[in-house]
Length: 266
Image 1 (tube, rainbow, N blue to C red):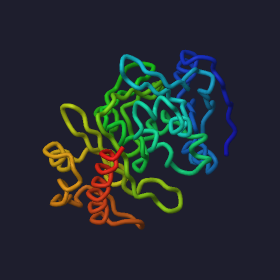
Image 2 (image 1 turned 135 degrees about the vertical axis):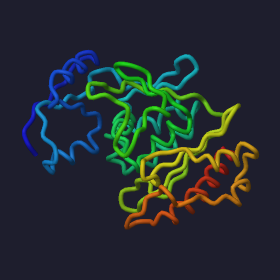
Image 3 (image 1 turned 45 degrees about the vertical axis):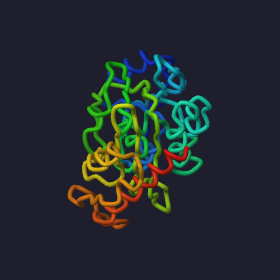
């Protein structure tokens, strides 16, 4: 690891000012991806800016929306009484991210900013049409996730929180990698008054995406059996040493069925 300065600004305004001061300055939230990168000397920075004193660790209801601060850890999301009441699917999702160490250090803001193609949160935020709030603007989930490890964030932009509407029903199911528990395929299903939204993580060559075939079938009849005749094309899906694209296509349907059943039973 190359040497660097660790800065602890006392406000998000100060953090924003420090970040814009140099291209060699980077923000850290949980550090689940950044720290291993630095340890392997795959990146070199001048100043690492910690956000732990910036007041981004609150979970509140704001204008009917569940608002989760960027520095809220996976553990705190999974154990929040407010999250369990307003959106239990998010609490359940967070409780199965990585291992205990990851859940105690990793944050929702860090996960969204990193946009790992196998991360769990992007599927939830996209399926629920969430809004990512930053130091500059509000970005709808549809416009936020661009590609693998790429988002709409500008270089000097920091996520401050994410807000989510309350679905009628919602659930998340994933097929976890047995070693690190990342989603080889993850499905988040959310039913609202006017629509059903289904997002897939861990499978797409371009990252998280919505599955319109499943959404159409569930909009007509929100039951697992509605997906019995659905066949997902393997085009555009990832193949790697863990799973071929056609197997991931099969998992998308099967996990969607489980997610629907779970949301009905909840």
